[in-house]
Amino acid sequence: MDMGRADSFRTRAGGASAAPIVLPHGQLRLLTLADLEEPAFLAAWERLVARAAEPNPFFEPWYLIPGLRQWGEGVRIKAWFHEGRLAGLLPVSRPSRYYGHPITHAAGWLHANAFCGTPLVAEGLEEAFWDDLLTHFDRRPARALFLHLPQLPADGPLVAALDRVLARRGAAHYVASRENRAMLAGETTAAAYLEAAMSAKKRKELRRQHNRLAEEGALAFERVEGDEGLASWTAEFLALEAAGWKGEAGSALASAPDTRALFEEALAGAAAAGRLERLALRLDGRAIAMLANFITAPGAYSYKTAFDEAYARFSPGMLLQLENLALLERPGIEWADSCAVEGHPMIERLWRDARRMESRNIAIGGWLRRTAFRLLKAYETRPRS
Image: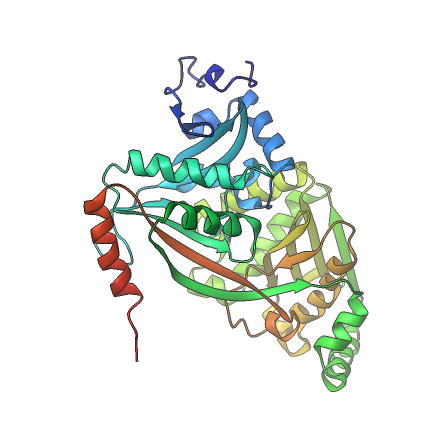
């Protein structure tokens, strides 16, 4: 199949896919999971990842496809082609409820274990992508009242381009929610960063905890890339997390078959794509703290971490994070996203920077929808005491 022409795409079943939606700058196709798994489309998708203006591992094939298998019923992929090449990709759903209210809308799709909603867009084509996407929703809103774009990095090139397009189009919009989550950044060494981030007293306390922990047995740190021993490492992580409070609460990855499958498939796919880094702190060979990073230059995402609560008095999770500061010295990496909720009591003690994340609502369609959108905007942005 020749992916040099947008109209050459075929579905897995062999029939022609839906006719492309012709837009001012390119063409848009609405694809299903089966379409995504076509070898030729996967190859085009990988090329898009390599030239994307902003990295987002959660929309790369090895992560998005397992998520769609588990929770993607009704999700469609907006695949945008520019001059015949795949140049943009965003999964979209049409929820019938908005924060508990019966309001049907179009939304960038994320599940509970995906932490960034920025679309994959070829560098240099950010404004053209947004212009075509908004034109598409204006022409074909279906039953959606508005477009909701969750978890966008507020300081990234995609949001900057979106703001320019919205200003040019005069489209009504607003920020529906904001959060600041811990971020690691700076041109410095791990040692210098730690010295600036923590007081001498706290650093001394961590050294004391490390030394006391070493008295419990043979203490060793490991850092692994690739897929060597990955299956056993993954099983060990799942067991470690499930043994703690998340297991008791039923929120551990191993607590449900779908989240277990996502974790297993995503780590295997990330390793195959050269995106995975695994860290572990071991006592007599047994992991007491573990961490999985996704390496997506120029950034990295600290995806999942777990520690043995029986050793909480030694802060094994924090000791492992001290080793994770080596991300600052990794060639090609300029920042790391903690993927942690705002106010996380451990990581914000060490990672001093903040990544601003925003969820945007944008008016689409004709005057009637836009009138209703203005009412929603007035309600959601009203002053609150």
